[in-house]
Length: 320
View 1 (spheres, rainbow, N blue to C red):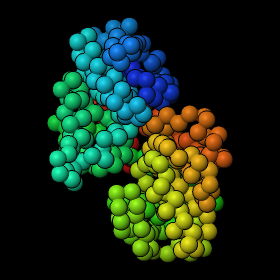
View 2: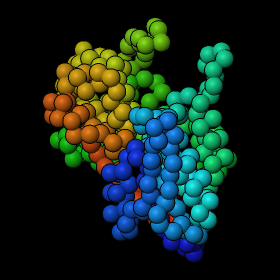
View 3: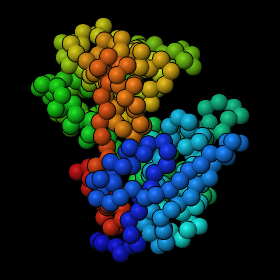
View 4: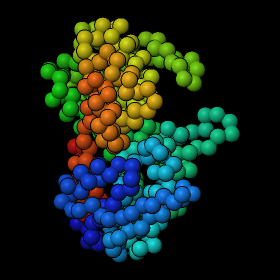
């Protein structure tokens, strides 16, 4: 099915402009022109210098540090696009950080994942395109269509190219919540699967209690949705090594790398740590990791998804 829409237009906020530029290269279109100004009172203003009238507009913005500025900028971009008579506005959010806040697990708190979804829709977003939500149920917070991409294809391809005889290794889920993702990558690699049974002791400390599966003498691929401070990653890597893993490779979708993460990765007993470019990783962090940090591009996957949405084709076929 091919739908006749207005011109395809892609714009970027300030959080991950390099990804947006790479997406546009794959689409063979220029990145649209817009300007964001922050006043001395911290207020933001967004203005488009290109015409958006009747256009099929895609706005690329990751919810990375500073997260509140990124969200506010995207809301203003959506609102300005609707005011400029855009035909349709799709918010492309490669990293939706508030997906972690998906339930009321403590008294008197906000379910922020739903609140942000409400704000995006109130601003005028007609559609959402995102990748690897920490909690897939956040998809249900939206009343507009959501296309939820997966980085499994990119991660599996990277491991297959990086590790000799990758099919003889074991994909290790660092906790029970990561089993579904780990299983999908294990199927793509046609290799083994294991997971760590954890017990949470405090809000910041967890204890690995048991290993379900066998990693002794095998290459181990630890896969997860994101790395923030790398505290949980250290525990998973050390536990795998204690269980007899030969070489450990880490691959995640979102490399947030906050606080002491880079120093921890540099000291980690792992061959490498790979993440996609859903979050912009500056060269200084790559250099500070002792050569362990690798960035995988998901720009082509986003470009293909945007192209399919624009023409009315299926997005799910990208993963077949």
